Length: 168
Length: 219
Length: 85
Image 1: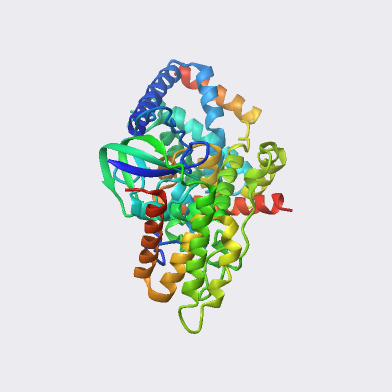
Image 2: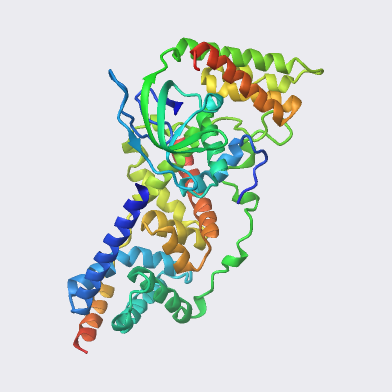
């Protein structure tokens, strides 16, 4: 099945440091990693998982073998990189960051009295980038309307990414 | 893949141990000497958990080896050689440590008190405030420092000094795990402590040492 | 096992208490996921986790003590006695 994966600019995994073979004229090499009961296997995102794992570069991956669905990721026993989603570059990352910051401001001011203390972290967080702002917006949504709202905000972020990156 | 590697490692270790035992039983002095050397750090660390004075810990380690020799012919290999030697050491510490010896009250390991937090609570946004529990100010980025400074002589000495000020149980666990390279299972078996408690002790110990390194590095 | 304050996200304060369990592979899958999500967006905690790795590495370089000469001699003598029996 097709899924997505964020990697560091050098093609390594942000948590394990594993170096993936990057696609070059064709898909990268298959990687095998047995899925044990708890953790391991190759981790990848469904589209709905993307906002939770925002990274520097985005890749389309093909998963095979045993595939386990976790709450916010997939774990598969085989995977390979198919292509880079090149649209996910600095410009779009900055746009996403700004989109989340604007959402945060909007949410903060959507109630009376406004959540001024929560608003205070938004602009200073911008340099830290899209992953943080995505969390900030969702967390503020949760503060106003509860845990459901956290997930709704994440779903909004997914919709934005799906559209701008032209994912299926 | 990981499981296969683990199995290979443990059967390689088992083969190595069988060979060592054969050499010991054949009277190979070099084998005995290198065994004593390789276990020395671990044995001191374990002994220190039960006995305070440096002299007594060394006596206890020596006594333990005599006990090992006494029992070597009868050792059946049901546990690993290391675990067996360390068990003898613990028993020796408890029975021969004299007035000093104490059973470690691991069962009295309570939840972390206020001073047992890995990081002082004041460094995080207070409960009830916006983004409660998040850093007030970020800790330092050590990755931007050259490795020679990070893992150089000075830093190692700071780590060593910090370990020496830890409560016994924490000191023993971090010495066994991170200095001597014992596995979690070896620590639990030797000290008769649960995996969870072993982790708590390791966590507290490492957190203290990190704090000491931070004070040293971020000056 | 630590009870988290939320099923959807963890705080920096929780991260610093969970880091050892994370290194040991002892976190339940859901908690490990939240841990990784957090260090993915929180630079401060990414740096803290790195500090803990450096700490373990530094401790790993602390030298183990040598066997004192006297002990070495006594034990070798004992070994030779044991051999002879």
